[in-house]
Length: 255
Ligand code: FES
Image 1 (cartoon, rainbow, N blue to C red):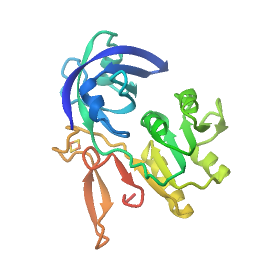
Image 2 (image 1 turned 90 degrees about the horizontal axis):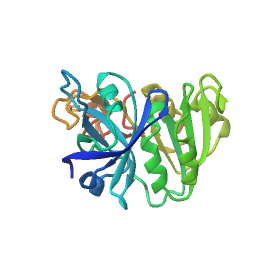
Image 3 (image 1 turned 90 degrees about the vertical axis):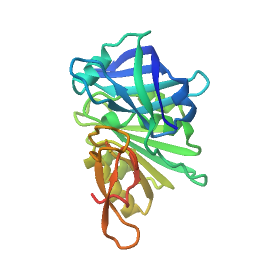
Image 4 (image 1 turned 180 degrees about the horizontal axis):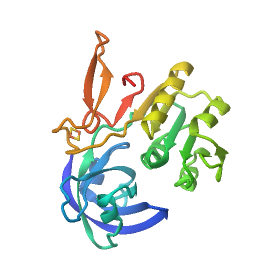
């Protein structure tokens, strides 16, 4: 159940150029947050109107904290990055439908691209069995050690080759040729499309967390739709990324 709250910042650090980790005390949201969901944050700057959707990176029910990792992409996130420990952030959440973890899945492939990586961390914490994580970045990998801390084997690709394999995440995935029971993915649409195509070829079910520009974030404005298949007649229908997603089955999306 979503709630509006003022969450106190208890940690806020820059973990890579223009990428920040913020830990918030947010008991109400922590109580119902699920892996793959997001929160809408009101970033305070002159003329700000719309909240910014930021995916949940970690949920800690023991300390009632949420961790968010976000990139500075405009005025809103710039203003957010300047907030200090001890200040309060107005937010609504948890929002959206997250990842589904099948009980019988024992072997998992997790694929993240750039700022699509953070929501996969809580997922890896909750998965059981063999977990292989494939991460692609332009040049500054984030959270790699934390994924390893949670028991995943991590493979990294960077476009400039400064860390891991030179290339993109699909290059390492195809080279490894690992089979799994389920694929989970979050990142830019071009990467998700490639993941969906590869998953279909390998006959592995895949879930993709879609990135779309959002306005209301709660399903009211229909400003964030993606085309999906209808079950029976193979016609298409629009679904709202913020409310029906952000996570969809890869074979449900019309790419
Ligand atoms: Fe308004 Fe999704 S952002 S419906």
